[in-house]
Length: 425
Image (cartoon, rainbow, N blue to C red; front, side):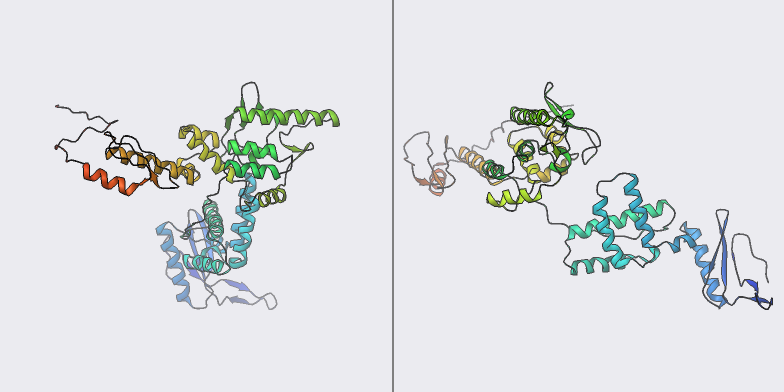
């Protein structure tokens, strides 16, 4: 047998001694042996043909040259192993979405449970997506499962259990919620809510904070009536950042009334109640049923508590609050997320249309225009006052203005609000 060069590995048939006859024998299956980073690895070729073992050895040496080595440990890693790594990572980092990721892993195990990680290629992921879509799963649900799969492979790569991550494409999601409360709708829903839920709904309407995780967890230590703040400590919010909201007069009235109610219960029961919002001294954990009942009774059955968040952002935009301050108050880290919540409603669009029409009429020579949007009638007044226009349509006014217009003298007037800086240097 020719001498093997150092670092090129070898193929061999292991010798053994029969336990009964004590006869020396040679195994029929060829094994492969190679070294990588000072450690020897052995793997069975699964074949009695030496050529198959040589092909396997060449593939392993090629992987070493490319820096991607599939060791036996890597090839034995299963999807179940990666799922366990993901669950341990969520528990170690105290992720709030541990329960939700459990549902995603259940679907992944159902379709891909018996598969090895190295066999999970992009085409298999696409087949999984097609199967989930055939089961009427929403694209957002499938994306959460694919995100869990991506995280699993990333953790496996860090731990040395995965040599290469497959490409996992995400689906397009077109399910952005657009609901918000008008003042009258909110008051109707508020009137049908139980007494213990009314204060938290009023605070959510003003602040836009999440009801379950950010308001129902507030204690009186988080409310400072003297300085005028209600706050979230770092790590309590979804983005892990602290947050403070000024106590507006509306918020101060609601919280002061809730404080008086809490003290009355404390005196009657003789125990301390740390929670700002509670049900007879006990923290509120479930409110889905009374919420659905109140929304149905108010004629808005599809409203959800998260609509308060969009409503608060819209109200901040209407009030002209600077966007940087509004993002800090509501708790949006990036402007892209904030813009998703700053939804233009019908009233804002009508106001914008009225302002646009006023500008257009001013550009055409009309000094004053009143446009009732519902009747589409205008009552403009021309400088000369020689044209009675009450009850005349917008189209007729435009035709009359065009007939009286004269051409420019070739010099465009400067645009108000802009200046031109010239330099001769």
